[in-house]
Image (cartoon, rainbow, N blue to C red):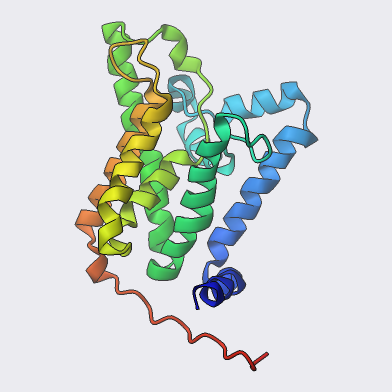
Amino acid sequence: MAFRRLLHTLRTYPTRSPLTLGYVCVLLLTHAWVGYGMSDEQSSSLLHHVSTNLTNLGDHPVTALLGSTLFFDGTLTDVASLEFPATFITLGLGVCGFLAWSERRWGALRAFAVFLVGHIGATLLTAAVIGLALRRGWYDDSVRNTLDYGISYGAQAVMAASTAALPRLARLPWAAFLLAWPLGGVDWSEPIPDFTTIGHLLAAALGFTLLLTHPERRFPRPTPAPLPSPGRP
């Protein structure tokens, strides 16, 4: 039964989560374009333009905030690298899994609203933390122009906001996992963690806040379509 339900979910993925599927296709295309269709100089220039660092947020904030969501920072092929687990969590679980699940449960509008609140909200809050850290001398001034782009803040918020949809016994371990995994590569060379770790924790906090503001019970789960019988085409 579980295997049949998994096959049914995969078969109905395009019709029940079409916007997520389209978004995943865009992410894969831009990843291939930057990695294989452009020169190193061109790809570096493009990614630095959409980076959500302090300089870009002050110069072209809309382009940086929205353009950053069209790329993911990670690897799909180097499974032995330290980047692959983060890619699996953010792109695999966050976007391909939980964003699609949220689209089926809540509709595309609310699902992607949560994603954007996590992405934009956590980015701006992190920028404020960076500004404070620079004034205190906790970060090097080079952080103003650092390369920082991708989908991970939005994915983190969606995964946090979906916690109540999980079985009751899985909710607390899942919430703990969302708060723990960003700490796996934390850089404690300064009095506070590196800003990307702070950003992921803030994105999770935003997702949990949205969950409390709009409890799962207000968005009842739609009745799933019946599974086809073995003899039906």
